[in-house]
Length: 480
Image (cartoon, rainbow, N blue to C red; front, top):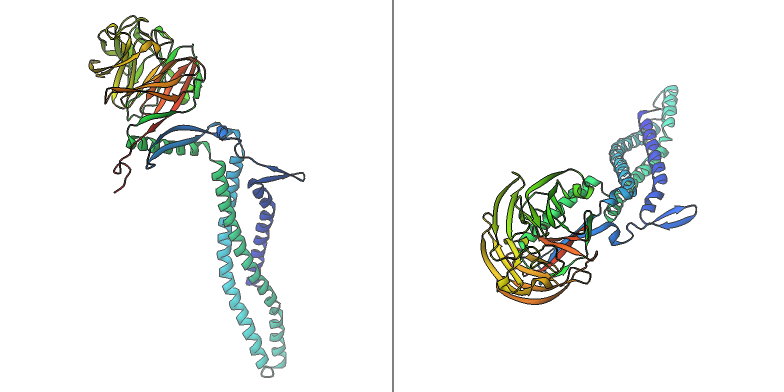
């Protein structure tokens, strides 16, 4: 058999294998795009049963004119290992990609061989015409032998026609494979079928974009608190947990302090994931015990209220030493002016976008909340505001952008009820719903780096997202 016929045979054999693969694989591909046939029945595939099944809100910020908003949704990590369809889809996409590449090579070879075969076809027809014209000009025996050889080539015409048809089929199969690859990519995007490492990279990118957007937006007024996200259930009914509030910071450590009375043991976890798993942590033993749960970590140091005193202590985790301590002038302590839940919560330390603050009460102020801004190095009071709100009537309090927000209770049914604005030394009563899932909050702090509320709720460590109402200037929004 001649070389062109051998090439045609190889091409047809390859096309047969491709067609067989497509006929066996396409039914399962169709099943991924909606239904799966099982024993004559059709079953609908639901990728996620509900939004809560695979996604959770991380943080958000909104502008009244709609110019800028920061919202991120992050797939739950359990979805990666829970559903094997994502891995199967990924493997299938790799196979389709391999076939697509093979089809590209096959098409290239087919096009090249087709040009050669067409030339052969023209040559054979020309030779046949010349033989007819030369009839009688050659010796009879030689002419007959040559005529017999040309006759053997005449069936090549039908083969060439079939080859051209097969070449068109190769082109159609290539287009189908390309369309199939695009459909699989769309299904993968819909399913969120990414590997765990891919998800981590996408989440990290989202967090970076989110924080950059939040910093551009700046401060805003609290308009909403999301539903709670329980991170872990650990420890007693009272306690505190936190991450570093310094902005910006790449420190991902988590600190955990169980109890509110005479505690000295602080657990430091390397990351939130380690905290959830209860692994990879070190212990700090404070030289002086704490009172209450109003502690805060700021720029690598723990600020807390010393037991049976109105002294604020600054403990540096890196050097494991006390860097500063100072009394709050006239501040009550030892359950003199606590929050409504008690627990020696006379002094509550907190951090917002503007720095370090202390919430407390003095006898001269008739038990109403005093808000003071502190120097984080010396702990000296820089300025104080008298809010007029009785501290014993407050469930808890937190600070965002220089505004002190107070909850109406530490029990179920609580809401953000009161807001004091340090910029104008004025206040207003608010009505922001606040879902108290476990019915007893003993710690509530805002983290400006994460733009989230950290709470200790009846032995549960819980996070809340906050929504801030922003007025965004045209310059900040990137307009000319």
